[in-house]
Image (tube, rainbow, N blue to C red):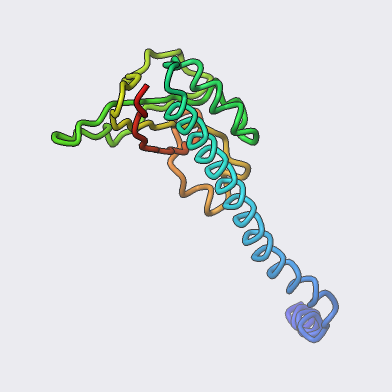
Length: 178
């Protein structure tokens, strides 16, 4: 019995059929993981760039529109209109805007106040419309779902209890005189 088993095993060891498929499985797995991480990074960068661009465009409009003081809802809607690639923008974004005193600077809280669509609506933490020559700081925090949360890169992101990751964009501007 053992002689027959040894003969079968030695014949199996000598055969080279299927050796290419073993290499393919090993290499394909590694290449697929690299590809999926690259797609995830590219999509996060694209979302962040679009959000940052839209916040910059809206703050430019606020800065130059000297007769109109926009509301929180108007600014949020304008940002979401500009950021075309961001999903469920108005439901998953929170804004903070504060006036900064150059002689006694008090910055925003390091923890961004974010929310996602599944949470109850909370009041805005701080949103102050500026007056002439005020230094203003605006922060937009966007919650989003990753494409591939199980990849090695996706697993490194900070997720909340519902599985949302966050993007934070901050911009500063000076309110032009009216």
